[in-house]
Amino acid sequence: MTALPMRRIPFDFDDDLPFVWNPRNPSFSTFMNIVSVFAVAFEKMLVAAVREALPSITDPAVAEEATDFLRQEGQHATCHRRHLKSLVAHYPGLQETFDEVIASYDELTATKSVNYRLAYIADLEATFTPFFKLLLDNEEVLFRPGDDRVASLLMWHFVEEVEHRSSALVVYDAVVDNDWYRVRVLPSVVKHLYAAARIVADGMNEHVPFAERGMDANNIKPALSLRNAMIARIPWLRSDEPVPMPALGEVPWSQKITSAARVLLSQTPFHDPAKEPLPEFADDWFKRYERGDDVAHWYSSTPTAAS
Ligand SMILES: [Fe+2]
Ligand SMILES: [Fe+2]
Image (cartoon, rainbow, N blue to C red; front, top):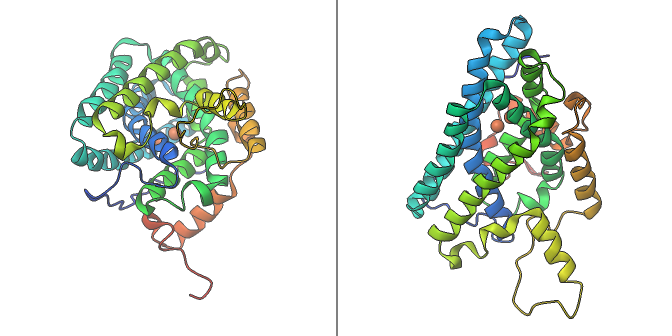
């Protein structure tokens, strides 16, 4: 395992940041705003759990990976907090929603065993590489048309999730050492995730005017997108009301199915994230970062063929 560097990237979010940061795709914009809230709340819980587990990790290599892992996650939460601050500047009521989600994760920290929290973290982090590969493989349609600052924040976060794809499981195995426990707690993890997502979506519906979000924030759920796509193909069920394009509406179905299958496989007991296929975009990102490009403005700083 090579060291995981902590990269401090100067993301700048002014108070002019629109809620729908990718006007071509309000659903994806909303979805990623929800991800930003989770980045703060979930990663706060993660950092606390890994810190609590550290004294019981005896293997120095694992302890080093755990420390690097929580530093990267701490940096993610810090930068997403800046994104949320900018949203709150526009929609002050959202602060209450964000506090409620953070409180829901703080409650896990206060009431659940460290083994449970490490299982939660390992379960969720295992889904990231297959899911973020799908997003990064389609960055041209999902991120490029949007606000460069938000797109750059998300893409940085996702490539680092791919970079530390094994860390949560390495820590879990060192402390809990039970391949089946994380499978057993999965239903309760999913239940908590859904409840937290509901808090965020309801809060966005309440505090962001419809004209500025363009959709019901609860409609980003993948099952609903699938249902809407099917209904749109059946003439007598089709509604005359405009339905926004699903968040991943421009992503090929074959890729979505592969990603969904890999996400499901990631929850099986002997899953090894090290064997996951990786997005090519991650290599480009690391190369540009290494040569000192402005990765906080990924698209506007991309060298053109003429430069
Ligand atoms: Fe993260
Ligand atoms: Fe992570």
